[in-house]
Image 1 (cartoon, protein in one colour):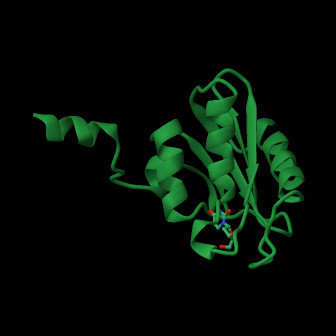
Image 2: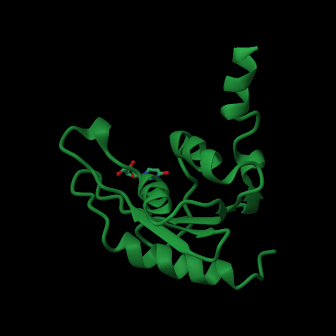
Length: 134
Ligand code: THU
């Protein structure tokens, strides 16, 4: 799994987009890249704001790029910080990723390649909404 060449490609894309992060407040630059089930690659960087709470994480850019370039399901995801090291997606962004990749989305983490169901156990999703309708 870890020797799949997609990881090297995604890491290079994430490092490249990290260089375009807008992080004048935290100075913590983040880049993220993901593979889509049709072979596309989508990327995003963090975009901060003077009103700190409305900052967009790099993962927000990824899911926006996914939708605006045609949708689909995310299969592999990589997030890096300013020195190129792997970064764990924050809790909110794990929820965003779950929506578009589900339990089987593979995430490169500092502790190895893991599934979304491992990094976001018992996730809330559309199934829970359906249950509430019954
Ligand atoms: N950040 C991300 O872009 N993704 C994450 O998963 C964690 C945090 C950004 C948000 C903010 O611009 C900076 O990192 C410091 O929190």
